[in-house]
Image (cartoon, rainbow, N blue to C red; front, side, top):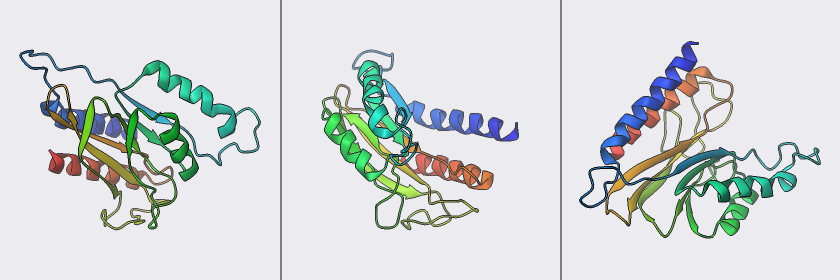
Length: 193
């Protein structure tokens, strides 16, 4: 239960940090609506021996969900290089930022896609959830694998306002890595302002 409370707190803090930067429509005190979404697509190699649940079998139904929901900004998790290329081709109206978690840029990514007609990226990047966050491929706190956070500072073309969007996929084994990684993300989000 301690872990669940921590994550709820972390999400609230991240949203509280982002709220002052919510874009406002000109002359309108209400925030302009921005539809955001997150989707763990499951890595391409997952369920590769299952004819009903491998990537080839499920990618079109996944794409149908994105098309139906029509988000302005979406964060994906467990995206392998082949899937990343497929996403870029399938969703041509979106721009993508992000890279793989390995030192060479390969491996799973946590990319962000944003609607090109509405936003432009003022700044974007990826950092590692480790004691050396700017060292590609680094890991700490007994994490099983390198974990990353991809972020984008997006400018809303409708309002001229900017906001930060961060996307991550935390470690599946180490509670310490999950907690310290979330704290690092919160600090970096504050720094990005």
